[in-house]
Image (cartoon, rainbow, N blue to C red; front, side, top):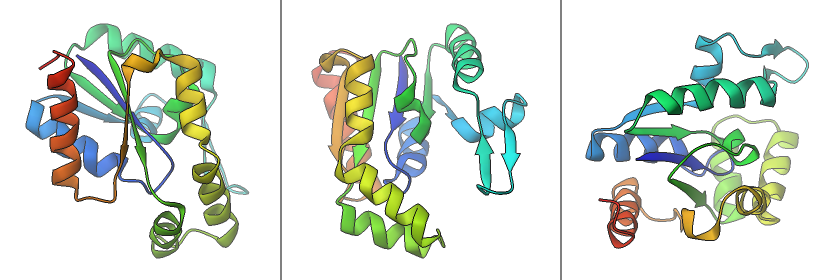
Amino acid sequence: MRLIITGSPGVGKTSTAKALGKALKYKVVNEKEFAVDERIGKWSAKEDELIIPLEQFAKSLKELLEKEEKIILEGHMLCELKLPADFVILLRCHPEILESRLEARGYTAEKVQDNVFCEGIDYCKKHVLRRYPKEKVIELDVKKTIKETTAHIIEELGEKGKL
């Protein structure tokens, strides 16, 4: 099974993907690490982040997914792509909780505001639902622990007859 975990920065994608990967014995791939390893994109000093061309990125990720059967891709840009995945797990977080998490990470006020705004207007959800059928989307609020979130995902996949 090929899984995608996406959502706004700070919702718990990386931690959840690692825990889920360990529980299912799946390979876990972070989008940024993949882009760096594959030399996709360029660092922008102005934006202080890696700028990744989505078309090239999607092509490389599709090639990866064709080779792997038990894999979890995680990252916030994945909501922008249509990839051959069995399920997309959309993690959500209350905007006030998200704001405090991003501030604790040292994000600039502008970056915090941008990401909280995106969470508040359901940016990732809207993009995921444009690219995948609703029955392939598992949406979870992550105010619980990573362990509880992981258990909930496993339960959902089991109910869908995939585990």
